[in-house]
Image 1: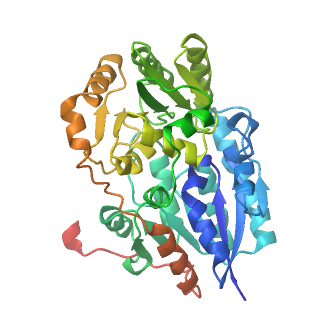
Image 2: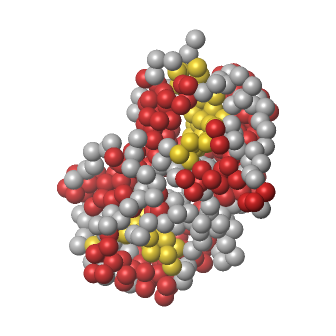
Length: 389
């Protein structure tokens, strides 16, 4: 009997990273793929991106609608509750042998919490990372403690997962999934990209991806306003905005993007670019600006610059192509000057991505088929030697 692997996704970015793993599971002789979609995938506001999953040839086993028409703290907490109830029903019906999740979002926290009660083994991708400016960090480490197998992106994160009390025999450094996707994707040419975007690119082009920084003292609205003031000064530059995640106060950022685009003829926004267009933009553009994890995890593989604003990604490993700045206009404007400077451009060709060189999807699929699951849900805390204290 085939082992049932249930892969859960709640956002477009997450699915993009998981797609090769899903394909590998689907093709594997001893594995059966189950797919649960939730979160932004089912929201018209965020582009109903579950359709992209179906168009890629994957059958969706369950849809769990958890988002409210609000992004306040109350609404997010209620969404977690709805998620717990929805995943409980789904797991009871699907009866997966193992659940595979990625990252740190509240939808995934709800899924893994339900799996814990059902005593279903969980494999977690991209654990051990630090993001001190968002409550995602606490969710990520909590997911680690409720998981039984861990696929991390480098050795530093491997050690951190072990530091959290996980048995080293269950922690595997497979590299970053984003790098794997990039290595196996045929990107669009500049002309093809312009046709897909339905616009003519400029001499200079920037991709703007900004999400709420849920633990920073300064509000996301104030931070994003500082970014917009800086971008409004740019000449001969096309600005492509992507929508933020459905985090606390994300809709404020969406409203500000819409207002900015209406008055700036060089600015354009997209609810969901899709993986191919998104990576093709990075490949053709001068750089990425915002506070998305993609700027640190994937953009360095293109040897392009990333302007990383604020503390949302604070603690993650950085390539030399990352320009960190404060969320205020002068600091952002200075970072833009660095991005286009000859000295900075000269180091980009030497950039090495700390998240690996690819091959992670195949490693994960083979491990999923080999894991011994009997008794795995009864975990012992792995204590480090006292010299580490």
